[in-house]
Image 1 (cartoon, one colour):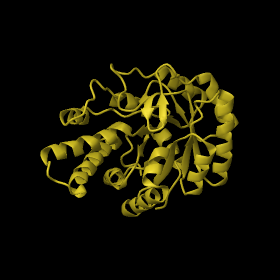
Image 2 (cartoon, rainbow, N blue to C red):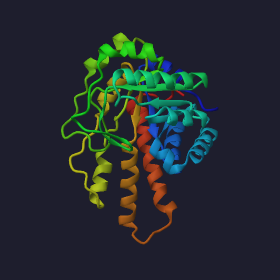
Image 3 (tube, one colour):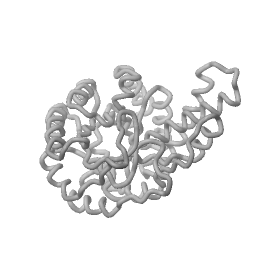
Image 4 (tube, rainbow, N blue to C red):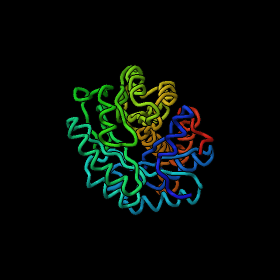
Length: 309
């Protein structure tokens, strides 16, 4: 199996009423945990890389790790740029072997967003690469994405047809009430499924993407708090809301914060219980195992894509 685009994945997901998990990766252990989980439940995968992760781990190293994962698992895997904010960044990832890129022009005006997205789409499609864009702005902080609650904005359904037709984009990330980062909500979020329904009517059979969809799992938040952290009152998106979105037009659900919390909480717990240990293999092995179990649960019980590879 080679690297694939998300095109066929999304077609099957839309028809089947499930979503593909798009998991952010930064190093070997995270990639191993995610792909081992997907192999066990036979799920298709999107491994996505932010600009920050690409700078941290190095493009070449990440691509070689993903190639190794494909060889080990035999799974269809799409490599996706998460929140690319310039044409130059998207071009670099396309030229470097990514099969999907996101151009996030949501901080621009509607017309500027269209112009930037169309430029990326034209270059990407010529290379056989698919493109995700964004309309609306999610609040929260994640890597280079930093949007205050005051600057957040729901996607306007009346704009989606024009945006998609003028840009030729392959999928669309929308804002319906999710939020980037671990510090999400003080009370249970209320996702705007009415907006999602309206968008689905205007864009039938078109794949929609949900960002900021980690659940902020209490087990790992408690672990971080117990062993030296401070994350009071953080709430994520309930699993039942994500399952409902996946049964509608949402074909891709992004998960990042949960992975970070699982790894960090497990490592902190390990050092609290084994303060004299210093072998990275000793503390990264349980962290990798925690990511694997988390991802398996997402694939089977939240996204519904197990057995769909």
